[in-house]
Length: 340
Image 1 (cartoon, rainbow, N blue to C red):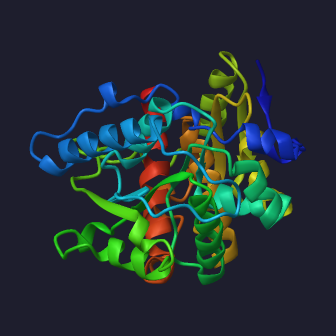
Image 2 (tube, rainbow, N blue to C red; image 1 turned 180 degrees about the vertical axis):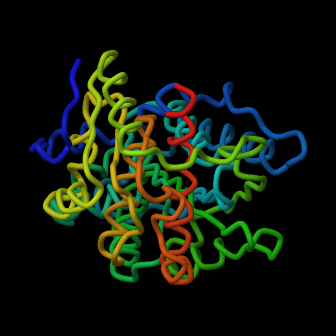
């Protein structure tokens, strides 16, 4: 039980640990279909639950595989599902529930984690490690990087040909809801080789992370933050770092190590927070926030608002969805810290 500094930690993770770690994050470790609570006012949520339960049954009794790199007979029904919807409607809960509901071998990763895995292992070795899986679940499929999108298209295509079932989620912007399947159309266009294999499942609703809740807490003073961090350290390992120093630390680490950096940390304190100075810093913060959220680690801060990490200019750009998701998550973690 101590107050530590993330900037002093040097995380190490092996390739085998990366593979073994392709499971739902701790926040969704207990997610099950039975624990998903569809919003009565959003019938698409109950329909999505029923569709994924049927998909899980199908995966549990799949047709025989023909072997790696061999073509299989095209299935009568889609061999993949794509959950299309806004932020905080339960798509990740449903995806994790699907993963828990089917027998292994299976893998669960965010889009970013999967591209990082290919970067570390190589394309063909990644396929060989995953081709015997029953299910690959990809959370937060991203369409904002053409290179990564096409890499994942090819990877998932090879795995689908080997008989692996694929499930993915992505986000429709809140202001695009009601305009038809905006994100689904993007998804299908970008993964043309796989589109016929995917059944699109719409999940509508408001962001549950903030529905009916008070505004996120305002920034603390430095003295208040030091006191809160010290009190948290009395109950478990807590971290306290300057925001700019942490950003420099993240720049030196491969994103696949961000989760390991947070191992054993019960709460995070950030002093002198300010908006990200450029896109590179902002994108690293997105990945870091995702790892914080995966682990349900409360975040306290002094300086600027955690709700303003990404500038208005950034929010008008191509990574808008990513930044809005990260903002939704970091504010939820700030609220958790206030209520601790």
